[in-house]
Image (cartoon, rainbow, N blue to C red; front, side):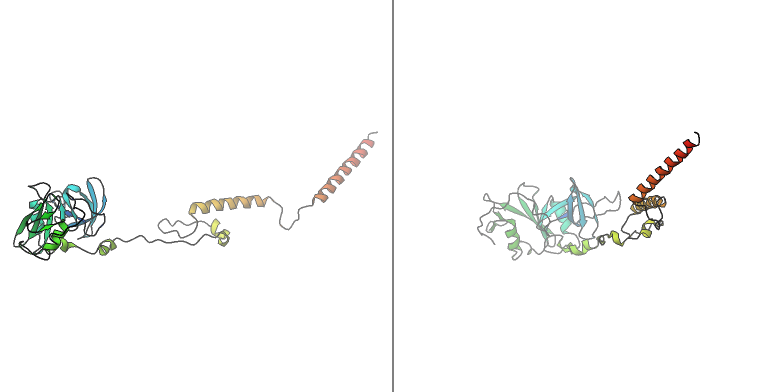
Length: 284
C-alpha cells in the first residue's frame, strides 16, 4: 500500500533470494545450442529450474519439457519472486513479453539500462510499455510522486489491484503461463528399485549347494546369498578336507586306547629279548 512506513529498508540492488523457492527460476534468453550448430535443447523464453551451479554453467531441468542438461550462464537470466528479472535489458524484455503465450497485463521488473541503480517496469498491453521506477534517498520507490512504496513488492501489490495511471492493471508475471507441476516433471525419472535380502544363515546351507558346479549365468541376476568366488573357495576347502579324511581309519574301526598301545610295546620288547637270547645260545 502506498505511503506505508516500515522498519526495514529494501535492498539497494537485486539480491538472490532463498535457494529452492518455487518462484525463482532461470529464463532462457538465447536458444541453446544455437540453431546453426545443432537442434536447440532449450529455447528462448523457456523456464528452467536449477539443479546445481557448475561455475559458469548451470545444470537445469526444463519446466516445460522436463529435459535435463547444462546451459551457459550467459544464455539465461535469473528471476526472483517470479517477476524480478536480473540481467534483462529493454529489448529482451519486449521479446519475452511478446511471446504468444504471454497475456495482456503480464509484467516484469528489471534493472534500468540508462540509469544504473534504478528499475523499470515493463508491461504488455497493446504493445509493451515501460515505466521508470524512481528511488528516493530513503530507499522508497515510486512511479508517480504521489504514491511511494517501501519496497518493490508493495509496488507490485498495489498496481495489481489498481492501474493508477498505468496502461492496465498488472495481472501475472511474465512466463507464469509456463508453470508446471514439478512432481510431474521429476516423476518421469524412475527411481531405482531397492531390494533387501534376508540375513544369511549358515545352518540352512547344504554342502551339495556349495560344492555343486556353478553354471554360467552371466546375463542373469544372481539371487543367491554367496558370490560365485566365495562358493568356489568353500568348495575347494571341503574337497581338501575330504582328501585328509581318506587317509584316516575307517569309521567302524575304533582307535586303540593308550593302555593297549603300552602293553603291545612291552610284549614286543619281551619277544625281542627272548629271540636274542636264543640266538646267542645257538653260537656257544
